[in-house]
Image (cartoon, rainbow, N blue to C red; front, side, top):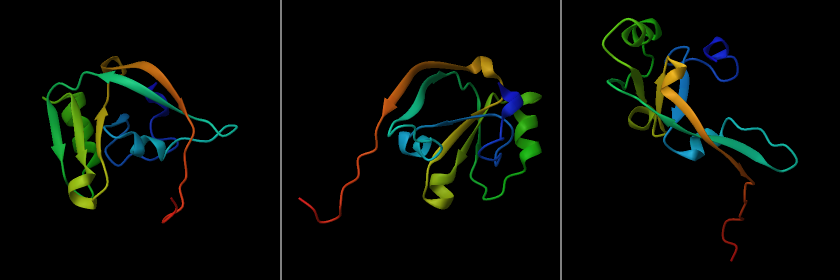
Length: 114
């Protein structure tokens, strides 16, 4: 529900649903319960994308471009400007369908270990 958008992780690109193309990005926001973590694997309809590679984008402008403008989502290209990950943000929960719940455990390896 978009009423809770930004309560846990922030709203760099606006109060929307944040989707990652890399599970390692999503893993940053998980919490461990009895050694296990959970991710949602979602299908999303992105439509016309408003591309942003600004370090500090105008949040209101991005939201308005999707809520009242010609775009359906925002692509925040943090990979280009920070070397991290790209994020897709939608502002209509009808654009996202959570298809699977993925349960996993992190595996840690020591550097140089065989």
